[in-house]
Image (cartoon, rainbow over all chains, first blue to last red; front, side, top):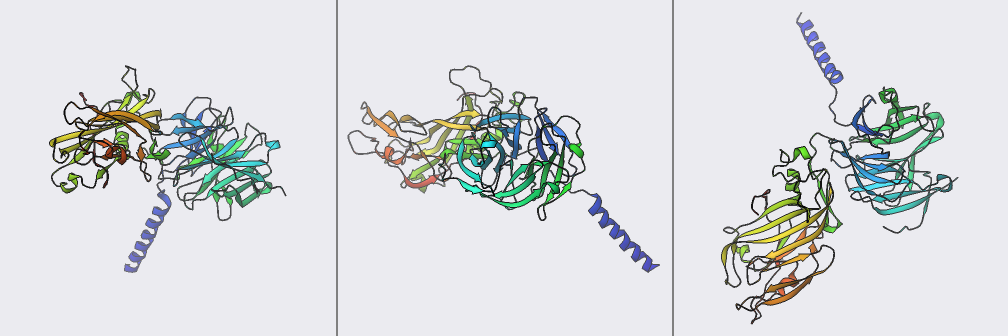
Length: 159
Length: 382
């Protein structure tokens, strides 16, 4: 009987450890965001399920090509999508506001990313029209006003 | 803008999106040609060429046409936003987790992100920092060699928050922002090496009383908030000394205050640009004031050397402001004993205090100091 009790104790202990590992989800406040230009919505995506919910309804006619986390500020930095030009915006997640930062003066940027450790903002894209341009540009932008700090033209090397 | 050093050949066809890995500091490029390939590259931050890390040919795309982009989580986990269809409207979006060891996709359960409405999505972004929390901290950055102040959070509160918990003095400026900004742009005061306070720190004290207030010239409307920004935020630093030691003991007295005012233009609710700076000395024989521009030299005609009485000596002070090369703080010099403030040492030491002698101000060599700041809010009488 004593051996049975010890056995049951270990079984219960194992079950307890298993339940802690399996049934208690890890806490995270990490989320993904995307902008739905079809409806002027910022969507928040659960990285565990891939399910998106409307986080802010802006209801304005803005189209973004790319978003990037902007420091630890509770905001995203976003680059406007083509028309009329690539303007740089800040999306405040807590307040649900979009503010214009500045105009890059370009019209072909598709990717933008902020590097929090250095405070640099990088962008890239291929000059328009695409069928006559095989060079992409890698650009550093001043995140405070959208002006171009430097840019490097890189020609696609065809095989 | 930096000049180009000539184009470089690379295999990157296009930059469709960028993503930063906070764990190893690499910047990734997604080059997606729908229904043809998806290529993932890392890119050299200095020069732009990339290194191909993964080429997904069409057959590896699991029926999807392309990748809108990828994003990294705070621990380096990677997510990608896949899509079907080549032209808009896109038929389906799907979030996938990407294992960067073998670049395999794991599709997350929600088909079309669990949505049935019309979607036209940008690339995804995660929060690879400390997490987007309900109470993010204010972070201030000084750029343009001390002439631009950037906030990560809004400077002005919403109209309904004016005078509330986050705007205690009711001026529309976030209280926490005021306190942080006051410290961040607190100017250095350089003392003279023979400054008497340096030998009297135990008994004599210095502190800055600071008022931070919105201001629009020739405009009577006094209420400001996020949707109604002023032209300027004025930082008034009153440098208070418990003892004015006089010059060689003359005109010594208890208590004095000198002034440094800064007019920061409100470019938007996150950014200020320094337009003008005012400084002053409070009492004869070196009483004067000047207005300075942060970018170019300004000349101020000032009255100094009023000893002997009746003698009024005017001089022209022409100078540029000084900003510290490390952290961009504005720097002023306090003259020995009487603590009149000057934009630099040369101007200070050109000032005569007694017209008939060579007795003048003495400045610099005693070290740079940041004095404690106290936010006085919006006093009734100022």
